[in-house]
Length: 61
Image 1 (cartoon, one colour):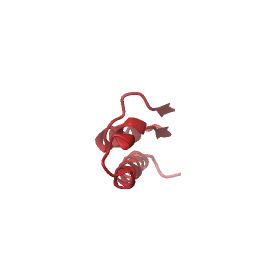
Image 2 (spheres, one colour):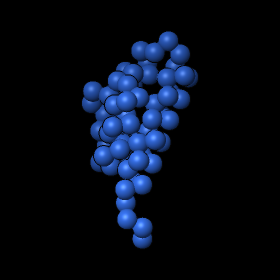
Image 3 (tube, one colour):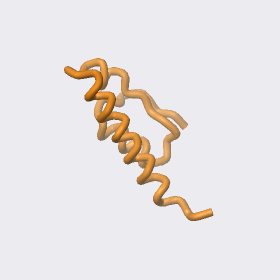
């Protein structure tokens, strides 16, 4: 599952990934930022943290 609509902040990305999405978009949140590089880094970090939170809840195989 991928979700991209209405994603404008790193918190949005974290929340989406935390519930188990495979990925998310955030074009407007990055392109509207003062620093594209800093914004991209923040969104990527939020995606990693959300993914880690989602996978921490999975049973060990």
